[in-house]
Each structure stands twice: as structure tokens, then as C-alpha cells.
Amino acid sequence: WLVPFFINIFMACASFSIVMPSLAPYTLEIGAPLSFLPWVVSFYSVGEMIGSIFIGYFYEFAMKKFQTPGRGPRISIILSIFLGIWGSTMYAVAGWIEDEISSRYCLLFGRIIQGVWTGGQQAVEQAYLSAAVH
Image 1 (cartoon, rainbow, N blue to C red):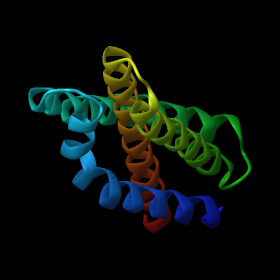
Image 2 (cartoon, one colour; image 1 turned 180 degrees about the horizontal axis):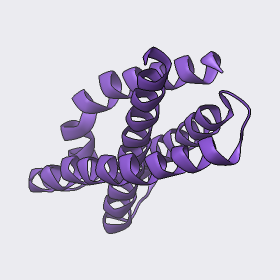
Image 3 (tube, rainbow, N blue to C red; image 1 turned 30 degrees about the vertical axis):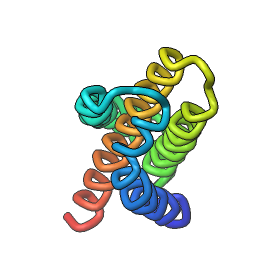
């Protein structure tokens, strides 16, 4: 199950190196004032908190439900990957929406989903590595 593990790490690093530097210009491009940027950043952090809790619980559930070694972490990581694709798509689509209010909400929604993805990814990877090393 290492392939989904490494794909998720790659996607997180690519997202961090592409999205973070583009946040301020992209926020202005969709017609939002610069004062909207703290909301965009904070929604990501809230998403990380939500993702670490809920995907962490899902990881524990999957570990108990599927007795096959590695199946619980793999399903949890794949869930995180799909959330990452969804959130990144919402982030990208926000620039194509003509209505400024709708594009702002799309950007916020995309950022919170991206936060859920990375929060869940960190929880699963750290829990798995802790169990594997222990």
C-alpha cells in the first residue's frame, strides 16, 4: 500500500508549493479584497483540525473492521487522496466562476476540503508510522 502513501505525500508537497504562494494573487484574481485572505488561510486550518479528527477516527474504525494488514491505512489514505483531488478542483474552479460571491464561497469550500485532506493525511500517516516503528 506504499504507492497510495507516496502519491499522497507527493500531492501534499505539490499542493503546498503551488497553492501557498498563489493564495494572495488568486484571491485578488477572483475579485475578493485582500482582507478576504485571512479567511481563506484560516478555513484551511479549520479543515486540518476536522480532517485529523474524523479521518483519524475513520482510520481506527478501518483498522478494526478490516483485519487484513495494511487495509485500514490504505483505505484511509485513498479517502484522503480523493478529498485532496476534490478540494484542489474546487480551488481551481473558483477562478472560472463569473459571480464574485460564488467564486469566494467556492474558494473557501475548496480550502476547507484541502485542509480536511491534509489533516487526515497527517493523522493516518503518523499513526501508521508510529505503529510500524513500535
